[in-house]
Image (cartoon, rainbow, N blue to C red; front, side, top):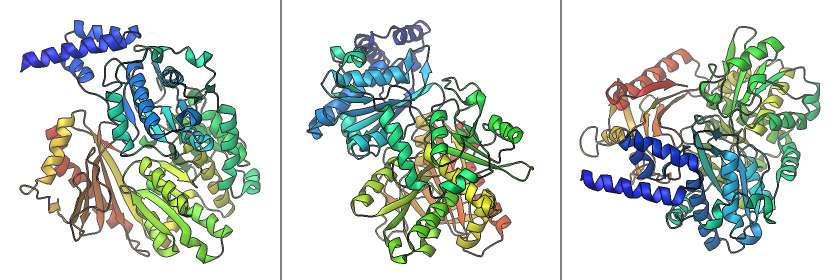
Length: 607
């Protein structure tokens, strides 16, 4: 068995050397691993391939079939071409949109821009036109451009808020939403059938010489900024607002675009955090480039806001599709809003302005809001009282984007969508989360509330008073060992014996269990999930007798098991301290009893 493993590894090394020798830096990485005798690492890199997760292909940059590098991006794009050529007859008329962020890694020679150019080169050598952005752009610009140009598909080279070592290959279908099944599986199959790079696929110079290259930057930037007017409701009030705002782009792409978005809304440009304004692939001023981590990574923004007497901080993640928001609490610290809290505010704001423009209650019948199933149920509470429609999707904005597309085809209007991991979409001009437009919307909402002598925090309390308090907690553990993750969830599914899920957690009784990985739902008469199956990821939801809903799921982009818990109180219930205490106890029990961090060597984190 050891001999077979050894020879398989040798065959994979030979294959990689044969296919990937045009980038000497990645081959040097491989040679170094061989010299150091790192067989386990070689096997990890060479004996497996990336698969499509909730955000496309995402992995560390470096040598090997399991990593993001020149070769695997070329293979992926060749597979994309093969699939598109089969299912999009007018591919050579419609073309492909390609964008990129600012990630780079010296040791492997990988940069997002180079990988985007190689993506374009593959298409050029098959006579497919490419709308290749000439500089870095926010991720939402790619799906926006796909819809505006009627392109066959789009590719964004980004790893969003992941650690600096990672990069990714995010694919959008011609409807402007991220690809979902069956497209993802079929493209993977085509990639496996197209592993031999075509001779011209390596020719990055085609980007300069091809007559099929078009630069969409100027047009898309202008169209996008103009279309922001559809979600700007109080431009004159904005222009007179005394509020000041600070913006951090977290060393990514967001600075120029958020500046322009604020101006489009009638505001002066927000004050930038100088140390984080310009692209830096090392993310040198933050321990991790994810603004969702809260006050610890927003330190520079908050201190600048205090000096400038700015009350609101907005922070976009490195590819500007997510947004964090903090508000100063009357000179006594900062309130950093969770994704669920921001969604309550933004959902209220979008509905408030919709109703102002549509006084006929009958119009509400065609209004929808969407959220992923692990997110707060606050929009559901809105819908129950206000009469519009609310729907849940599986985690990941690809499900939201595709559902918006389906609803728009039937004349429905989705006015707000979100996922709890600070991903928001106000309106539906893009079919993906969008930190740039949301930053401007938050500023307008704050400016309006300021005229009513209300802060964001005070309005959030008002919302809870009307629709019921929704108290949520999110935490996660880090696990870099996939077999351990499998073992944890297998134990949950056989907790009390074969196929017997747990009946309690700590002192709390579990009344219903939903497992979208297997398709089981104890609350349904036929015991089958209403949500689609998600076999490629782990997700189990527990409903407790006291009303708490908790979900354990694996991340689609990072080596994490996430834990989401929420207590949804009825309108008028105000004993918040006891709700919070029950939620804290259930959350702690879920992590300790079901994940067993000490036994499984998991690293705990809270959000």
